[in-house]
Length: 175
Image (tube, rainbow, N blue to C red; front, side, top):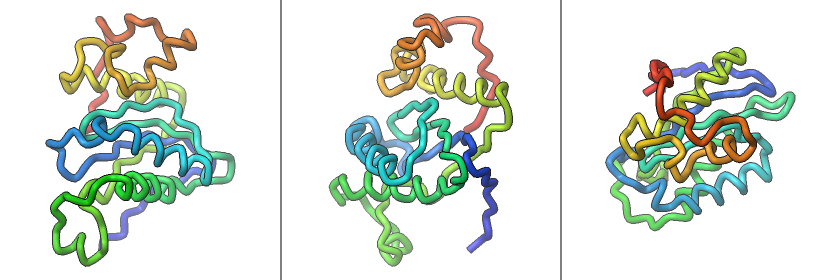
């Protein structure tokens, strides 16, 4: 197995993309409560802060901040994916490799991680998250995305309800 090296910063802030194995399914939004429940359980055992997040039918993006002295985002993602998977019916097809490792066929094994470097990097990734449902054609305006932290940002007065309807720079291409 290749030795993938991930950047680790204790107490760091990270951007993640986590994908379903079958990118043509709508499993995440169809089972949003299972995902939320898994994240809540893991957050209780291994605290983290969700700075921004969007859940689309086949993948999610989020910016998470870990507690001071903690760099174990891998533990959190392994547990979130495992708890979410165990709460769903086990009717998906699985490869021989996944059966051998007693893995479900729901999530891609890996995920994409990026360490946030500074305020500009943070802002660009949060904007990317909030605009992502529009980019993929699920909604016409970011505010129309039902599973997005944009609603919290609007409620707190950080963003206007019309944010992203014109003039946004969507050149940050992370997929």
